[in-house]
Structure formats: structure tokens, C-alpha cells
Image (cartoon, rainbow, N blue to C red; front, side):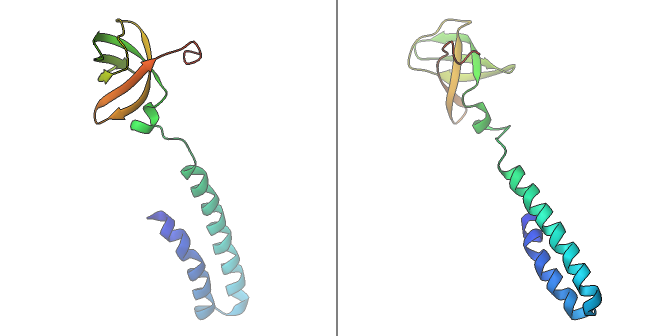
Length: 117
């Protein structure tokens, strides 16, 4: 919603020419364009940041196996207990990497030495 305000600021600058004399419209336009450019840069920076919550933030993170049977079990990720499934059997205490989520079930694979660093 706030990005639409950014798009409307140049229109507000043009409206200054309708209600103000040219000697006041130029500085008003300069200020509004400067604010618009500053906000545009800040909005772009925020939009390019990595996700810090939700499923996107969990991908590639380490978790420890709490219990496992066959190809399914439970993992501990940041103090939360998650249902998980993987391509192989794990033992309690093994480290796994979360590769994705299907609903509320984590998809995991065995962590390598590179993942633990």
C-alpha cells in the first residue's frame, strides 16, 4: 500500500503548479521529488532482503533429529518440534538440513560437514 503513495508523489508535485506560484512550485517540486527518490531507494532495499520468517527462511537450515522411524520422524528446529520425512533412516541426535516444506511436514536430508559450518 505504501508503494502507491510513492507513485502518487510526482502527481502531488505537479499539483503544486496548479495552486502555487512558480517561485514556490519549483522548491516544492524539488522537495517532493527528493523524498520520492529517497523512499524509492529504501523500499527497493527492503524488498531485496532475504526472508526471515516462514517456509523460505527454514530452507537450508540445520535441525537435529529427535526421533525417527523408517523415512519419517520428528526434528527439533530452533526449539520447535516438527514432523519430518527424508530419503533415509536417521538416528536420534543426527543433524539434518531442511530442504523444503510440504504443509507442516519438513523435508530433510543428512547434513554434510559443509552444512554444519
